[in-house]
Length: 219
Picture 1 (cartoon, rainbow, N blue to C red):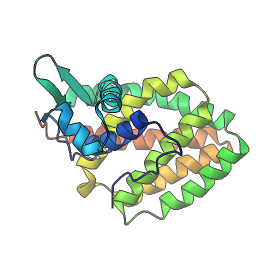
Picture 2: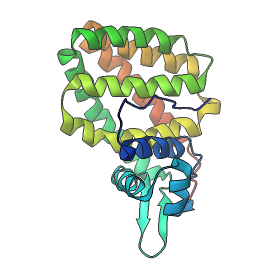
Picture 3: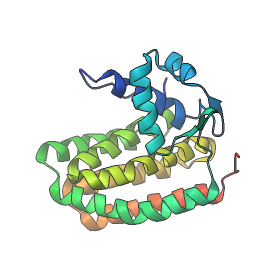
């Protein structure tokens, strides 16, 4: 089972398909931090041609998951302790704004989807890969509900880096606690409970801080 097997949207462009396929390889650490890769390697992994893969590479580079090295090719961005400390620091502020706006602005359809997703997340306490997949869906729902594309863009790369961190520590993660917090966040946003949403988010960020502090630097 893939860790993040979200179905591609209907009629997704080849560049979008390449991005999603390669992003999954990066956040699940199949492409290891610090590893040198060639454009041809990524084309083979995605099974898609050069132009869409180049577009995906540009997007992944902008999000900080890939680094373009002049005359050397590409490198999977290392998981650096200081970078992750700064990412968590920024996410604490920006993601509070995201959940507040999502709580205020979510449509009825989005609230219903969040309720259903909360139930699924809370039931995933014995399946880390299912939890990671559902957590990604939660991010996407909250991004849509907040209705602020600039905020979403600011958070996008940081979320990818943190998903790599979650995956790195999946073996020692308190999955029951994590599923309850993420499910509680989804449920709070769905019901318009701003205080509850912020409380759940703050506890999730605290877990991220614990994971950063326990990080074995890979570079």
